Amino acid sequence: MAEVIHIGKMIHERLLQQGRTVTWLSKQLNITRAACYRIFSSYSIDTMMLLRISRLLNCNFFTVYANQIDAMPNE
Image (tube, rainbow, N blue to C red; front, side, top):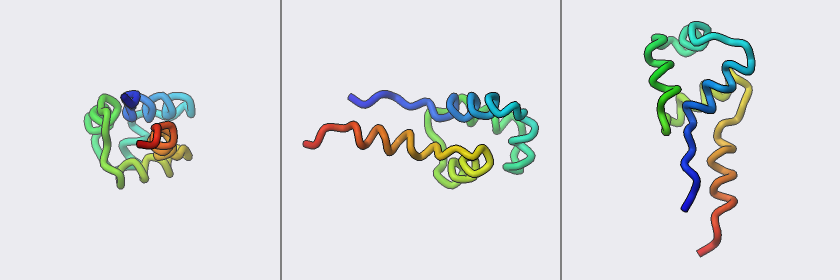
């Protein structure tokens, strides 16, 4: 079985690594801080939102999923 990806946690960690704040991200995404915290607690996220976040944080979060697919055995 595939490992469960907690994409929200990964986004939050990347934000902190860059020294950026939740306020900064919420302003960039034009969403509330509460909405940012909901993203951080989510195991899944809308792909367009993930694309926007990937661009803002200069991190291709889609590769996390692609790597998991590549690691799957062929059936």
